[in-house]
Length: 198
Image (cartoon, rainbow, N blue to C red; front, top):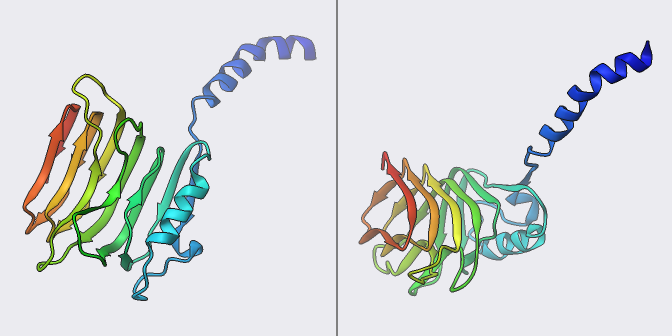
């Protein structure tokens, strides 16, 4: 009887095992646990960069949670694949002047995928606006390097450029606010772009 029961259940068990392989693991990290504290007027970019470097090789989707408040970034943040930056009434202010990125996802030849930024306000300066909030600089007219990039529920204010994305398949820019910005979106050689509710 036990053998018959196992025999009848075997196809169901095999189906469950196969479906479990389709599940993507998710890991959550709180930026405050890695030395970045909101509203302390101290540069937080190094803490985030070190965290991204430490989890880069971790499989699955990595979610980094920002606390409520303002963070100061003195350096460019180079993003990794399979990352979500999630704000909670979070503001990021760049400290240095200059024509530089705040979030950067790759230069020529790099390949990044599954990047999401949500719920974050990026606040530039009215006197020095030469910041680019989010950028991917790859450019080759015949190649797609990156895929699945999503920016949603963010606010961009007092910036020279908000979003520059090149060579990407599946780009979503949804439900964002743009205030006092010279260039909202620059797109080169992208496929499957969705822009809505901005």
